Amino acid sequence: MMVGANIVTESEKPPGPVILQVLPSLQTGGAERGCVDVAAAVVARGGDALVASAGGHMVRELPRVGARHVELPVDTKNPFKMRANIGRLARLIRAEGVHLVHARSRAPAWSAYFAARRCKVPFVTTFHGVYGTSNPLKKLYNSSMVRADKVIAISDYIRQHILANYRVDPERVCTIPRGVDLDIFSPERVSPERVIKLVQEWRLPEDIPVILLPGRLTRLKGHGVLLEALAELGRSDIRCLLVGSDQGRTAYRRELESRVEKLGLEAIVHVTDHCDDMAAAYKLSDVVVSASIEPEGFGRTVVEAQALGRPVIATNIGAPTETVVEGETGWLVPPNDPGALARALATALDLNEYQRKAMAERAIAHVASRFSRQRMTNATLAVYEELLAGAPQTARAMA
Image (cartoon, rainbow, N blue to C red):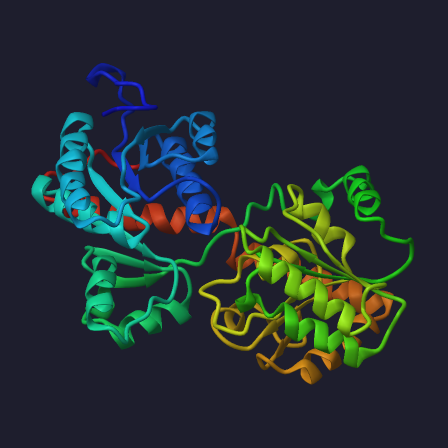
């Protein structure tokens, strides 16, 4: 069962508590990044960090931070296999002397919940998004995320969604925003060579403003709204990059490319693929857009761009209303409103050097004070400490 993890004897265990995080896989995404960051923080505090998942390319990051991975089929939604996972997780908890379990997704949360209760250890969940609640069976399925001793919401927007749709004591629900790694997303850390490499790869002309919309190619990200706004803006002295993987949505990519041609934007709009150096991509841009037509649970790209000192434009629904300071670090516009987006783009592109520098300073300070990785991991470990202090068998302190 301990695939991908080394058995650690009692004498070899760190002095701090053993924390087990459970999520479907470690491919890519905010939940996965948060899991690795918290695992690193647990180890840094003298604890033992375990992660159970079905695997993925981010697994290799765990040994680098001193954490261990346990490969289990916790990505399954099959009720019989989910039930079998209860036993698997319970055996793991007992074998490793786990003090607390933290689940980050609905299906594995069911198995983790019953395993944690069976082993009498505290249970935590992180609520990462808005799940549909119109179907009673779906709502019941979602409720695994609110059965924890403490429920972490990644934004106040998500917290309000939880309280409005589930029977849960508000005292058990806390907001801990996602954190940005300021060692990566920092203007000083991005070399000119990295920026030049992307400029050459994307064949961008010099001294032309760049508009960036990062995110996977899906209709919910509002690419079409941005294209309409660019047509309304009517400028040819700019470039717009739609940066993100289509994740198999080839039909949507073709639809976007067709729409670019129909609107006569071929000269200024480029649909690229996944970028491995987003910090450099943000730095080469003049304005970063999040045109989502449905509420974002957090909106990581908006925060990352601000960390790089870039002005942002986001839709005024969901968490961006918490992460963007209107007129100070960026602008908020209604969703599905190309006209409002075009006006905001014009404002952003017309900033003079002094205004752009002042906005960059405000944005960097804003992210550092509220949305750093350090702040997120400290707050998460504080939740662990609170629960461990009240556990029947108090775990070793996270000094």
